Image (cartoon, rainbow, N blue to C red):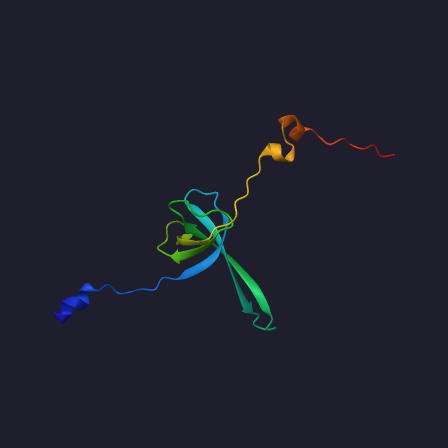
Length: 120
């Protein structure tokens, strides 16, 4: 009976997790997460910032640019994607401005060239 209980339990594996900032969500079901870490320089011992980008799978497309997210290591899904979105830790502020609020009422004002000055 003890053998059955031992065999029934699945081994608990700790998957690697990282926390970073979403820098791109333009691809379908894929986000690019930039993970920043601070480490001492091997020779000069000054603290330097190291950044690395990871491609992560986002099935529900829940993460947006600027969000702080947790990504979890998984099997390779493509040439670059080896991570999945764990959860969104903090949402970024989404700012939306209407064109009329900044004086862009007609498309002609957008396309008009600024007057060129004559050099004398």
